[in-house]
Image (tube, rainbow, N blue to C red; front, side, top):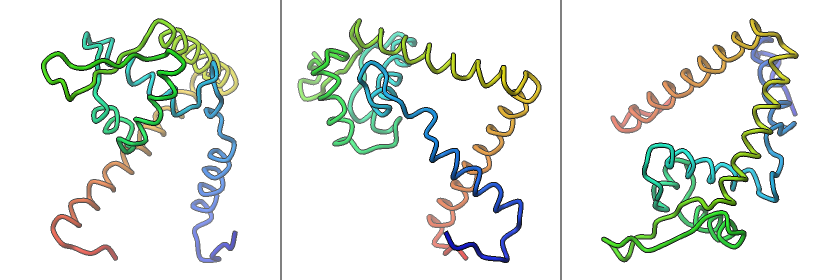
Length: 164
């Protein structure tokens, strides 16, 4: 990678750290034969179940996961073949298909959550409580920064203003 000599050294350090973090792929391991994208979809369904409504539509999942509906449909095919989800026609709107977790799907979610929390518990033990709290605060601030920046960029495009 060619590095511009005029880049702030702290910016370079952040770039390198984020690149390494991404390359490591710490959360990208399969669980019970499911790819990370399938696990995210199962968590999406589980989250909905916790609020009483067990069914989701492809379009809802697509919006929550920020992927196209055809991508969601492909993921659902694999999850359905492995009996982790069920699809059924909506009794009110026959064109709509509801999707919900099966017992096996809930078991995969439980395994994924156990692995995820165990990994993060190890990180807390490694960093210590104080640094872990500080790290969590920094991640929240970073996400807020990029969210606000994205909102500003969308607003600029909406108003017809070009970015510099």
